[in-house]
Amino acid sequence: MAKEAKEIDVLESFTSYVNWMPYAGLAISIIISIFFYFVSDETSLAMWLYCAMPFMIHLALYIPLKIILKKGIKKS
Image 1: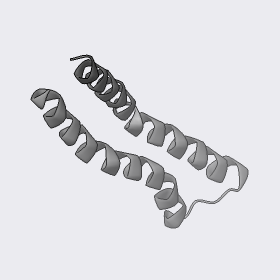
Image 2: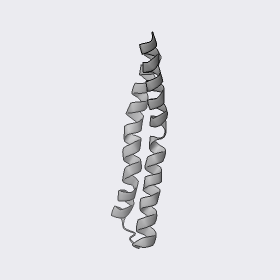
Image 3: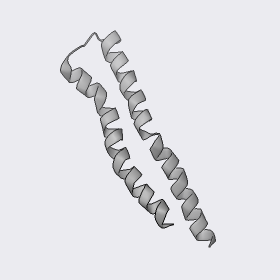
């Protein structure tokens, strides 16, 4: 019984980490875009796509993980 409770605690702490993933990607994207726009004066489409990539990757990882974790918590 204690092992199951520990697994649920680990699952819940990982869930709270996963909930912050898109925001971390957004913060990284904003920092990169500020650097490129203000420091290097680069304003091409490739630069904006490069800046949006961390957010898109974190979001692409967030959605499947969130679905899997919801199913895992419901089973427990």
